[in-house]
Image (tube, rainbow, N blue to C red):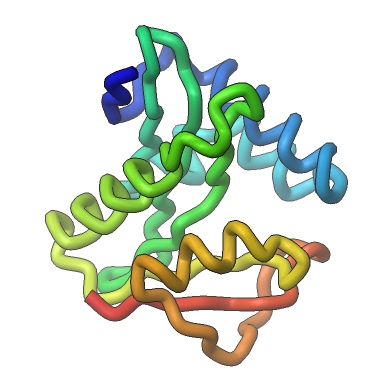
Length: 152
């Protein structure tokens, strides 16, 4: 297995939506804001200087994550999902590294993310990559109960 990380390709848009929808339905629910973002990836993520990454294993989409610009110095890491059949292979670490490299290339000074405390595996991933908990700010998700940031 030799995973590769690629930037957004329109032919993988359905994979992004399917992986994230399956993840949300497994742990929470798909909220109205999720649907709005899925239907308008270009407007919410790509056009404001963001990016969507895909992790491919043997040419198959195994995982995905998005970097959404918040302001001139900050990106939000959002919509991280790995196909269950590829979980345990540490693919999320490859996706995290791509996000951090991307944010640095855009001269960002901070990456923030929203999560939920019950997602211990995800929280441990973020901590391993240097994220720390910060006070929650107002956001668009009912499920979010923890905010984390990484200073670059």
